[in-house]
Length: 316
View (spheres, rainbow, N blue to C red):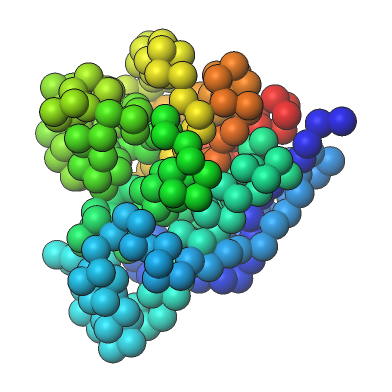
């Protein structure tokens, strides 16, 4: 019998956000779950409750000084954790810790054999660096998850795949010199979009040179351009032979997002997720965690993430 796809749901996870009129509002969790419930794939989905990270978990990726800063500013509940994108909302420390803990819970469930695939909608906070917030992201759950897979389960070869419109700079620079973190990122060219990084020449440093794949696309690129880039990602991952795959599937790369310029349809996300399932079955016992990432057109994020889960279900 096929295993269900774990999908995480709960108020604690929904609480990560910054309220109106901030693009990363508090409604994104429920918009997705409403769409998923209407998709008719309940037989293949099992809902799971959010987790919570401890400080020791956060320290796997983040510096103690930065964790202390978030804790202090979360209590005060005013100002910004970065240059102006990421407000220090009251309680943001606990909300961000829940995001990290939920992605870790998904990793645990997969490594225990309870599922092969899992999806965490409010996650994929790929801009947060080891020592700072950025771009709506407080703690980098993907970075913590990669370090956790190594520390807890002894895995080394982790693949991080990012199809968000924005470059996953927090993950890239966090592992830029790490030859066993295989990084593949298709994004809008940084000359036209935040954070301005992710040039094709950025392939890793030192022993890690050549282990990172950045594919910037021009504004207006659609499904055809994505498919061509994705063929390179598949070849790269097939050669990398990862032991675990982390997918950041931000929906801000779909046409109609209010802050980006790519023009994908939801089919891009469905196809990418299906392809990753095939690669995961070939190389790493099917193990994939999907994280929602960005997406600021609510219809787009609901549909794109639902199509990712549907691809996971169909491949399970």
